[in-house]
Image (cartoon, rainbow, N blue to C red; front, side, top):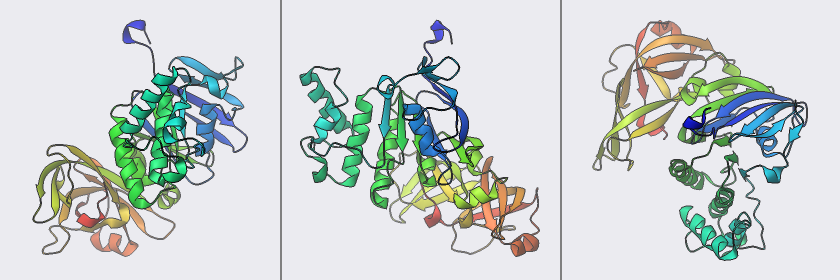
Length: 365
């Protein structure tokens, strides 16, 4: 990249390992972009993060971050972890139990004078919605609060890349959803690449821009979130990941009396349980394949309110005996999981016009 365009703040990763797991992958992440590494247990997701951080050395590879070579097997370069500007957040928090929340964050600010360290630490805690809790020790904090401290400490290093290793898996569902919303808000201000390892596909939908799907130690699919989730050529993996897709719609109105938020989508109107998103804002909705029913023509008087015009584009049988029907719904992919009987009765085939029916309560955002 030329000087006129500014330095390349991206991270570029290529690695091949034989231990602790066999792994071969390559990807790049731009500043402000979040890439999710997903896949079955044992596929090498966490190993990839630890290799980037310098905790494992690949047998072959090259890692360049913000224009600086961190690892290059060809030239023998391998920077120690402390020399890589990495913010790493584990699911286990990894906080020092004898230190307060503020002191844990200050441990990542040793390059600053003590007064500046304390001021910066409390500012980061406030940014993570922990105002007033800086003097508490980890044992005095909830799981969600401890994870916020861990994120604040990672950001305190002013990292060139932020690595999140299943960061919200140790907290309950309600707390996880709240932390995901906070991370989505925080992402708007982050100027570094972010790499997330997760088993939670809902987390991918809410946070990620791109996805790398690992299977058998190799990249099985990569691309934009919806492109990967809509793949039908990897049915065994799709089943394990709870297949589904993402619809992007625009908030049109909030109906307090009915308890619903109404959205506009090119394939039709969508209603979901009341939210507080701004009118005109874009929202991403995860639609699980098992929650989509299909009808030919207008289904008439039924309780399912969301009825999207769609066209069948592909069909793929699953090991379970059901069939994934891939649809084009207003230019976005949508998948319905149906029985073989339904495919025959509805005469489903590429080009067939259908109505996709989705319960409002099944939509997840």
